[in-house]
Length: 223
Image 1 (cartoon, rainbow, N blue to C red):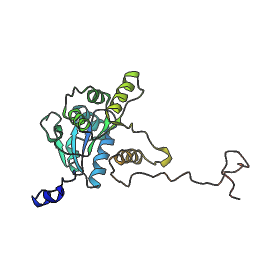
Image 2 (cartoon, rainbow, N blue to C red):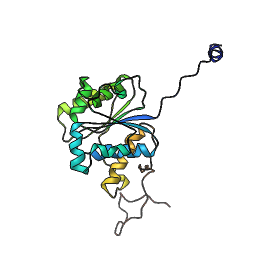
Image 3 (cartoon, one colour):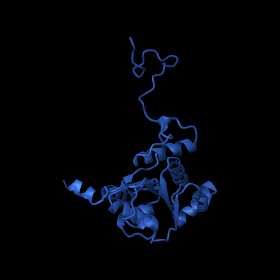
Image 4 (spheres, helix red, strand yellow):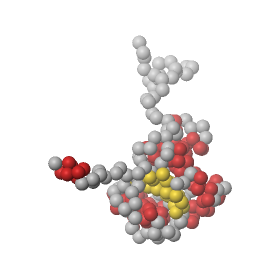
């Protein structure tokens, strides 16, 4: 009955949230992860909002010989790191969440503390408080106890900690394919389908090599 009255008043059902994802690139090594995330989201037709830290300007130049302006071709909207009044700084601006790729320990620490000093960490804080998906591709090794405790705290707050660990079972033939697979798996968490992920379908059955004989670790008999 209430639904009927609402329709008679001309009310409409709430619209579905737009397919919109925030992409953050921090100053940790691995700027290519953020660039690939932008490229893959653009190819998937997802609206992106990009924010790049000042330290990331250095890693983009050092690792990829790129400038932040080079990323505009794949980003829907590019935000200044100091623009705390940007749309993504408010929870009323609806998104599917945020991926920070790569995520530095400093950015991770700011997010966990809630004491944010830039638009990147403010946007991440907003995503957490609105109970949206936050994926942190943390790039640091080795890790001391403080790093581990900070990651634990982020996970307890609702973030997904996803270090970009290469999937060697996919037999990547280049750094680019290895990076693309890792980013594709991160985008799986937003239900974004890409063609970069080699899906596991079980162990491949291969004939034993010369001299394998009846070794215990050989393939099972098919007889």
